[in-house]
Length: 172
Image 1 (cartoon, one colour):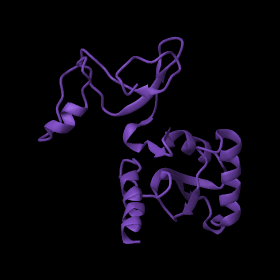
Image 2 (cartoon, rainbow, N blue to C red):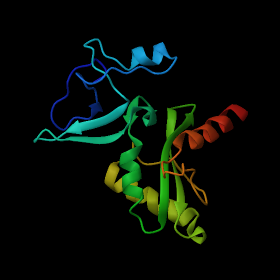
Image 3 (cartoon, one colour):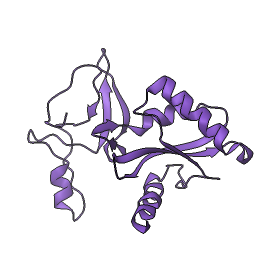
Image 4 (cartoon, rainbow, N blue to C red):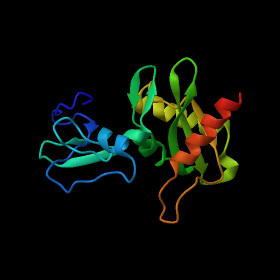
């Protein structure tokens, strides 16, 4: 947890490791210090949970966490739900600036067929999220893009999507 206490089985928390090779961020001693606990454990920013058999399941990245109204929301859970919808080819869930809540949950969706982009699909995805994840994790906004930015390796570049929303906030 945020106080560096080990979590119980099934609880979600930041993943730390010990007894591994030492690492440091190049020319960034502050970031290196923040990646180490008082116990000497290190983290790369992954979020996960242990099951009853001791297996670790990585569920998200701490840097992607959305804090909305004081609640920590992990986008991967929302993305995992929305991506299985047959009209969704790709999805990224991010936190966008919100004057009242700090951040709001935004789903950026690449539809399988661009003709499906619009209010009907947004409403369907919102309904599914509300039914299966509850109101707090339901995207407050669903936007459509013809494609989402990815590296040649396929890694989603969420940073670029987030930057678009924060730039819009600064401009307004």
